[in-house]
Image 1 (cartoon, rainbow, N blue to C red):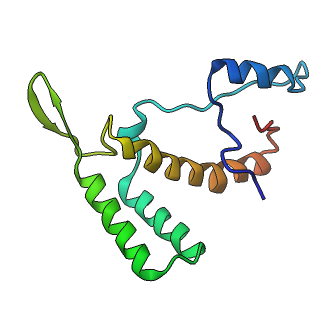
Image 2 (tube, helix red, strand yellow; image 1 turned 45 degrees about the horizontal axis):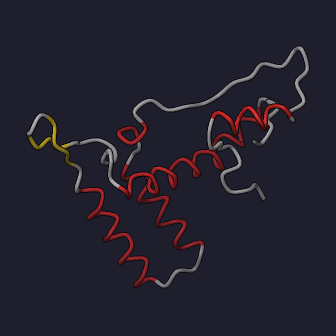
Length: 131
């Protein structure tokens, strides 16, 4: 089983330290995946489905599952911020600056890493060094 957060790094210094111990042959290329506008790029409905699946897989009591998913809906609907003294509603993704957005984004990104990235690296025989 793959370790949780196996593709993540904490900082530039963390990356550099981990790269020092990574075997690099002359024909290797280094690639990094990053997001632009991360929070507004997270699909809320898909993330809710992923969260529901995680709760079911971990045998969380149905009543608690319903309550957590209800809170997810409440949190993700409060998607507004102020700009130039005006309230702006953000229609896509997660609220920028909300404490919950990092956690919700992490749920989605970990799912993508474990379901898609791992599959692609095996399919195309891409060498990955888990940092």
